[in-house]
Image 1 (tube, helix red, strand yellow):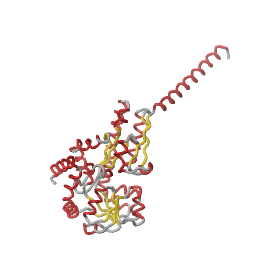
Image 2: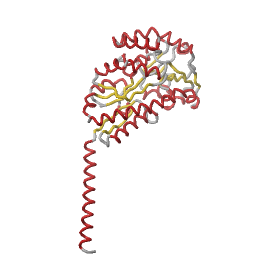
Image 3: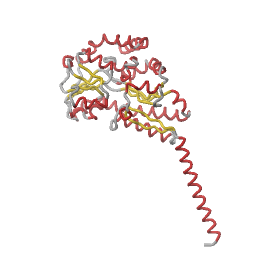
Image 4: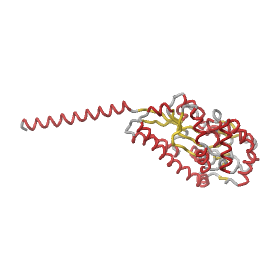
Length: 339
């Protein structure tokens, strides 16, 4: 090898090393510049809603080229409860969090409009409620320095998992039930049941140990977590709920504008994904229950009408507890759905 060949070989090796060092430095700089957020969510790993949240986090990381790194964790893993969402965001303990509207009903009754039994019967009605009450909902979030991003989930009719068949209001009398919100527990009490507000992380154990003999949650959640191992019957209640991606306004405004744009785009796409999953569940709930060996009790007109008739007086009580916003929301709901 002549000295010119050695020269060019050494020069090439030098350039490779230089480019490698520069590339490594770039990756280190990118990692240093990455914004790291933790996102507490409601569902456990294995449920399609949780899968969607994980996709949202990974896709945001990919499209922002690592500038926003979001780590998803179930609420219980972080020692949090759904009822703490508004305060958690307001105080900036977490920059973003999934908020279950029914969970925060004790602090903000207006947000429990989706949990007022009989006001909405399915996801279609729940979506409409969101549309014509959006201004009232944001007024509540403003009090907590919070903003709801377009990753919104409207749940199907709630599933009633029970050790005995529930077909009439009489079947609810004295039934010990797991409830997930204050207002839901109040409605169940009016119907004669004996409810307890129990966090989701403790629901299976409470049912298994006989603390309660029935539990309310979305059908797929109860089926996925193993309720069919403990109870035999699944019926439905004319009640849904909603959850949203809530973000602290200061944290949101601190993000670069192009990162915010990407987050909004990915959130909208995630909503489409999770909506498809809920639509499938709503149409196949009977088959899903039977596939797990359960007896599915289809809701009859008599069942839903009797519940609505028994609970109708509580609607005005709820609206008054929620203040002027609640009264206006109920007026809009009744006008829209002819109730």
